Image (cartoon, rainbow, N blue to C red; front, side, top):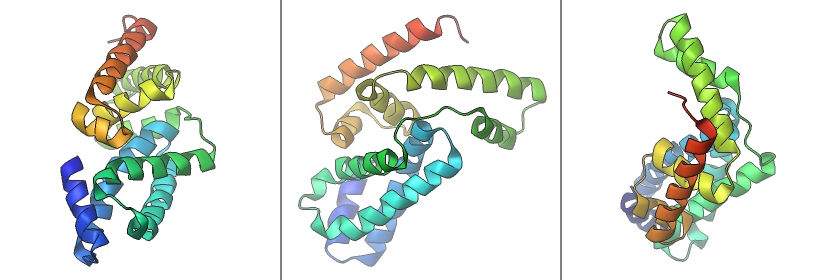
Length: 177
């Protein structure tokens, strides 16, 4: 994913309009997933993502190194979330709407909703430097190398943070299944 975004960013900076549209489309899905996990509400995530994409589109010409695009886009999203009020807030309503759209029975929805809420609360309690790699891996589906590119760190740092975050989550969640 990161390599594709870098190639599209390079072409878009060169004035390729279809590349810009593809870049924004690809970036939107990954930013929205991250924003949704961070702010805990689908509508708020859409607003924050739209703000970030607008800033990305208008600022792309100032991006000196297309290799830095994934990290640059991630930082823009972080600033947009911070402007919105920062702290992620786990909500039950948005999780209920997401589960209801899938169609399981009412008992399944209630059990899954409670499980999702407990996990979301545990994740929100993690420090940002530990929470971000988890979100990028489990929500966005990024590999460690791609997470390192987005966060601007080394792959070893990502692996250590993931190990620490998963350990803390296991301790906080105990026997949840």
